[in-house]
Length: 201
Ligand SMILES: Nc1nc2c(ncn2[C@@H]2O[C@H](COP(=O)(O)OP(=O)(O)O)[C@@H](O)[C@H]2O)c(=O)[nH]1
Ligand SMILES: [Mg+2]
Image (tube, rainbow, N blue to C red; front, side):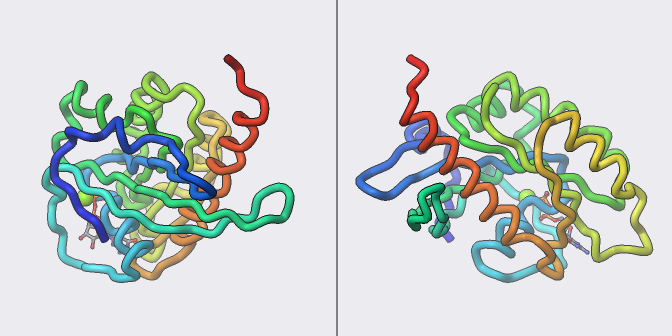
């Protein structure tokens, strides 16, 4: 896992490609303690830590994903997934962090209704900065079935409202974690190829 604690080069890390390789920036959003860092570590390192360590500064991890394109060829996609820490309360920092993102994964904790209630704020602040980038919702911590407070229905409503995709995940057990990131890589790749074939400008 590559980690970096400063945000000075954020915009240089945006959607770009060299040769056959595609590189995309994806941001993790959502309230503190919903499991953003845990989802990223489960995906990139396949580990889980019960102990909560607040994310200080902004970090990212990269991972190469092989994605099948619409012609049946396999493309290598480098995802750099950004994980923002507690400074997300500063609006300007948050905007800098989101700028140039090809997609967002917005996470809530199914045991914490307030994290679900905050989803619209995250959605709107992302949409302001990235009007066309796809969004993926993670209803996380589904392993805590007996503590679950937010059922599937409101999650599906949010999916329709945001025109996003919805995943019920557990960073602890690993449920659907790879699916979210790989589907995200696929969607951003296909979108990028389509836009390149028919540039709007
Ligand atoms: N049971 C359970 N705990 C989780 C899950 N994901 C994260 N946690 C725990 O929730 C706490 C906060 O997780 P963290 O990834 O640091 O949240 P962040 O603030 O959104 O980055 C930690 O104690 C994690 O161990 C999950 O899927 N299931
Ligand atoms: Mg964190």
